[in-house]
Image (cartoon, rainbow, N blue to C red; front, side, top):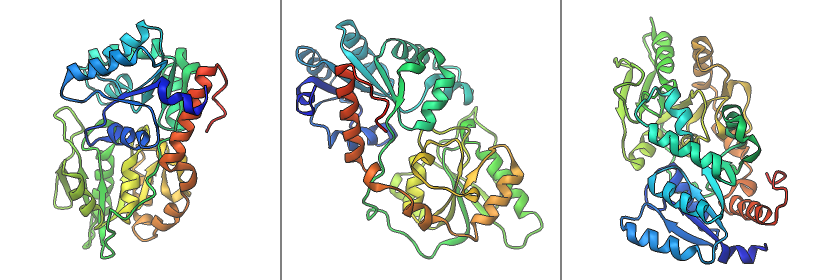
Length: 344
């Protein structure tokens, strides 16, 4: 199946409307894919299903991005008609709900289980996340591969503030257990003990009733969820961004922080590490080790790593056009029954 034939034989079903991680990935990819787009977050469900049913007459391969009800129903229909299906996996309902101690998403977990069982190929958004899912879902290891997310080349839309608060630190993800932000706040509190000049930590993101119990004080502030442009403005004043996750499928927030001029300190378990060249003091080896966090937070507040890490990114390989080209190559291999596991 040549690249030209993909145009008339492949459809991409996903969210092309909202402003979230998966939707933003979809919007970037589709710019470089001359294939059928079916926006499954469109308000008019009749239009969604009409477009999909018509596409069944000529499409051989369907790409489904993320797991939600409309996508799941369309996936089942495609599966019934024996179409080849690619599932872009940005996260795992089963794994995330277990780590975050969420009990009320049984339906999403069942949907995910069915998709993993029946789909032709699963593409995770980083190689590191693929390795984690191989361990989590060993029965599906042979069909789980990766397509590393792209990195936007144009950084001009975020203004860097050179007058940074040299005591300011930020984390995102609110109080989800997965993000391990409580131990970051504990590390800040310990570093501040007995000091006249103290570090300040801002915690961005949703705060859940059943999440980690993070206590505010004069130097630890829970900001909550704010619009993206406001978050960029705040990050542009921040000296250090910390991502202390147990795991992270990718971690686009790190790229945002880098573009805002922040130094970064990242969990070794984050997928974004696949595209960055990091040194020992840039990496959190143990997300539960408060002494390591204290030492590396203190180090990165006085040793800038922003430019070095930004300069390490291979934008030629990780721009969205190149990522889309690799997806096209994978689709071609899938249709022709060829090995796609040398496409990286």
